[in-house]
Image (tube, rainbow, N blue to C red; front, side, top):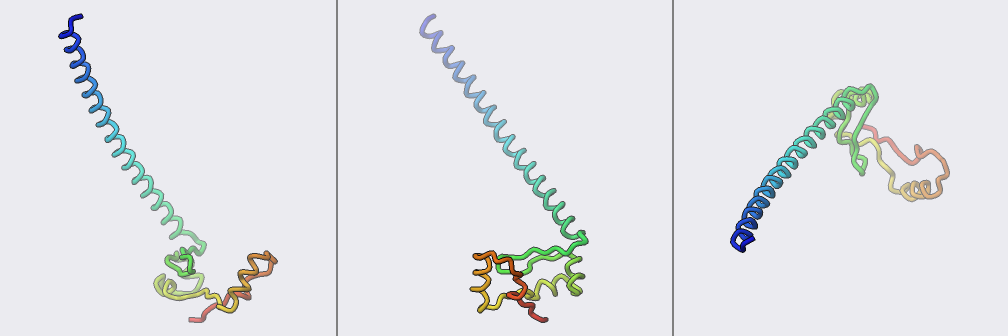
Amino acid sequence: MEPEAAHSNDQEELISLKNENETLRSEVEQLKANSSDIAKTEYQNSQTRFRAIFEYSRLGNKVITADLKIVQVNPAMVALLGYTTKEELIEHKFLIIRPKRITRIGNYFKNSSGKNLRHHLAWRQP
């Protein structure tokens, strides 16, 4: 094969490979976009299912933060505790830990004595 013919074949192969790379790059971007859309849809469906279970459950459900602040309740919990609105219940602080009892509670968990913690916790009256 002559040098000019070999050079021409190399150029054609290089162009073909560049085109194939572009096609593959385009396919990868399309797959990423589709998988992102699928993930978003699955997440939204999951949130819808959770909300339906949470809201329509006959059991009292709540979502609380680490510092025991109630951030969300369902209607069953509102009725169970005798409130008329979710907002009224969310604003109310129920569970407080008396500061002098914190050490005793810590010891309870360390010792696993099996005693009920009810005497360490107090209900704050509205």
